[in-house]
Image (cartoon, rainbow, N blue to C red):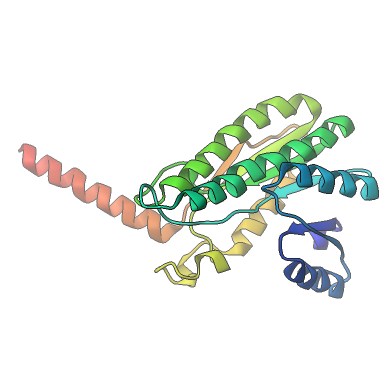
Length: 229
């Protein structure tokens, strides 16, 4: 975003990590600002977005990306359930709603939500995480339809496993995961579209997982045929 001449407003819990990214952007002649925020607090989200608008007068793009992952469906502590729902689902809604309020006034903007393939299909031990992402997909679909008349686009990106710090303990090696550059290229493509084109949702599968799933389904298909002969 900085390379495309946006002034990037970095929002997250760790001010130290935000400052590192800010310095990286400024070292390449870009512009960035930092705001420390826990998005699970609706009141703090509103105050933060109000402060951003007060300084910059507008918001052109929201990259709604904050999220955590914890495994569990029945065997997961209630505190962890609340944390996942508060950040992945409610937090994303708090931010999008606060930003949408100003975008509606300026009658332009783009909201890009990062959900997950887990928001399209649930796997064992991912029940709560999947529920949070399914919820975000449903909310974003309504938002897409609601904001089009204001000249605001909404796209939800649902990637499979992306090579980030959050997935470093996944058994799949980094080189077989979706790369962060793939997400960057997707966002760049979305922002390049003309005003008459709007994409509601993009699914990005990890080819390693997809090929294994296809293999398993194909094997079952032929096995069922053999059983019926």
